[in-house]
Length: 578
Image (cartoon, rainbow, N blue to C red; front, side):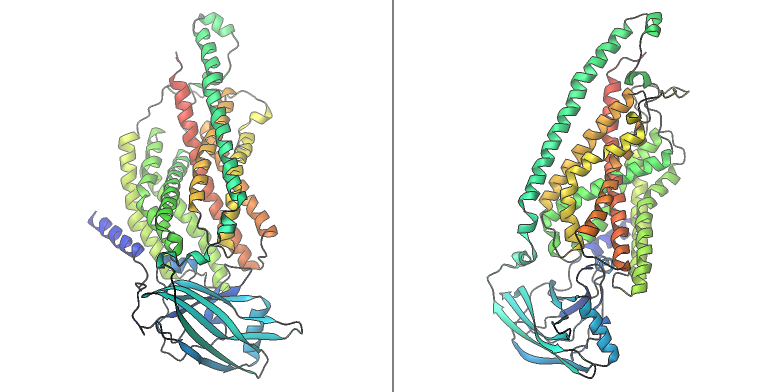
């Protein structure tokens, strides 16, 4: 246990440590310019090391290449020192960085970059800067921007603004000479350090009237569904209770001759354990876990404005996922115990490894493509070992603790009806009442409540937008929970009324089918809303969208199961069962 707590403590220290700089400078103190990545403009995730193109370093001594955090390594941040001399509040006139002779190899490399609209990214004091490499004129001649002009704003002893202007367009040809230069202008600014990231935000895009309308429309959907569920509970079930109470007053012969039908008839099988209980309970535990992680990360980002610091959101996700691992063990282990599962250790290990293995497997395959392309998105082996260590030494022990607590606190069955020894035959029913149809249709309304938000989230991740409206995301998250539960309750009622007691998997899959519609929408977004191209970007896009969709499906499926489970326990606990 001491080892576990030590690893947890070290992991927390690793995650919460900030940038090595404290963002405060003295006059004439060195300011580092970090070169990050280059890549085609339309393929944001297809990035390469800045110096993978034949750019030359500045004359100043190099600082070794490093990743500041695990999140940087995973996101493909490749910080390399530029060698350009910049000192705080010291203007630098036009100065030479380096010069190089263009041979055939350099010409072809830069020509390819210009043809594909390559942009590059740099960082000064954790503020990102973007610039374009070159352009083609009407005569099809290639030009390279060789001069970088930095206008840096400072407020007291902190940098609050950085602007880059590319100048000196030089024609690119074999045998020519490229002379790269730079200059720095420092200007006092009234911008507060806490507000310096606002220039990168786009309020007109994210706070558009369509965004507000989608939230309002989703709230109307919530009101409608809550009303529908209330009607089922208050009116339809009241009639069912009255009918069943009348049947209870009849003698056995009259009851046998009566027309028995409806959800009461499956009371002896409705609490029967789901098929594949280990897999099912692991999915439910993982769904609870992902729901907690999503909620805590959204709230943390709203409170702390995490989007302003590079890699902070991903670091928070990793930390919160590891710290809340007992949630997975508690709910998954208790459900498996209530279903009379015997191999609880295997279930605990499977539940712990299922989602990380799915993530690592997908990333591992994509990593092969990134390594082949020599892209910066290739995750280093040491980072993979770090993730494996977190899973083994942090997540697994915490999951074990949660499993033990779950089995002892809520592991005993508390069903209002006893389970029959022999399963009841499931009668034939109309095609639209079959579980497969309920599963297909169950995800439409939840998807309808979030698909506008999906557009904004996709645009922020796959295009050059910074997502900052996490208040909207929190509202959509709440709406998704309510809509998913309400829809699943309605689907479960119809299924049970058709005397089909297979509600556990049906409720999970009907809510989880939301992810199928999200993934189908990702195809539409890729082909009609972006200009992405190439095997690398296509693999990266659809691989990570599949991972996102599966995660969303597990979370929505768990929410659906939670709503259906509460509904089933409620209606059967108020019915007199002989």
